[in-house]
Image (cartoon, rainbow, N blue to C red; front, side):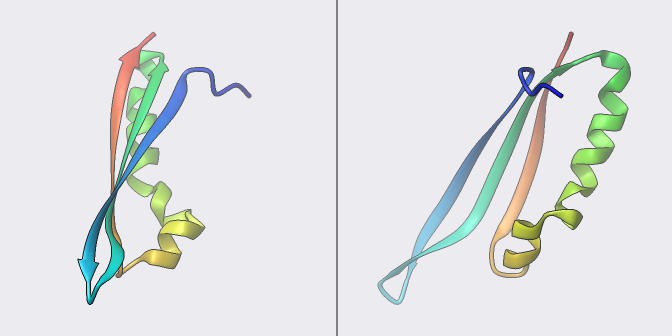
Length: 74
């Protein structure tokens, strides 16, 4: 399996609470080049992957996580 056509950009938003830096939001953008015929499947996977992600499960309720897809048809 190759991930040459996929890379992710992750940005955290930090706020100060009681003089302590706290991560409040994480935004992920997945940049993917794939066949147009795979787009629907890829979008469905993106909608549900966080349910099986150990990191997302660990911070659920304390850090808002959002994801978006930047899709390019091959």
